[in-house]
Length: 218
Image (tube, rainbow, N blue to C red; front, side, top):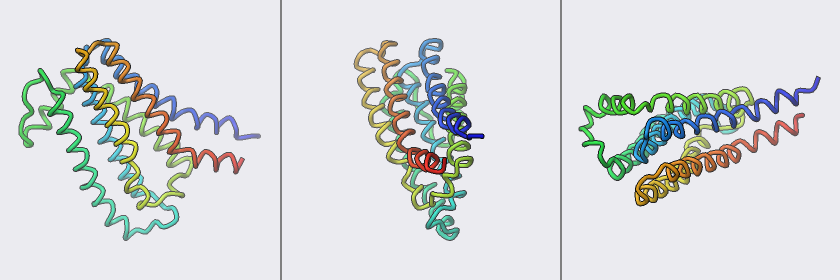
């Protein structure tokens, strides 16, 4: 019996989960009056999710060139390096877009304040949707379809930066445009649609190699 149908399903499931998760901020804008700051905060949290999953990928990678001694060096290095990158991105978002949300507390009080902000504006459901989307892609593509057997921790060290940099430079530029327009709903929805489009293209490009190898095996 051909395994084409299960393969088509695993091709489409991560893409469907990605689209569904990215529709969560549409609900936030339409139902909870999210502004551009809250939308950008959500996408910033997604950056953190991407970094944490990349750490797990680095730990499980067993492709050509993968070495356990290298993992013990690169995993902590990536944690510090990407953590600094995400922190800098967060400072930018909070510094330029948090108009009318009060002041950001000091580092020791930031986490309780941030969790309260997320609860107040119903951000947790969207964060959960994005987390599930990335977990689906991780399980289907990285584990079940064997990407971990073709990837090394050295390759993964820089893997998130291209996608994150292109996406969020574009989104932040769009965020400034939305603010300049007075944050109308249509502009926020266009910003979210732009993000979905970039996400789909990046997802397709990053997993094209494994999909082509699956077709060769079939």
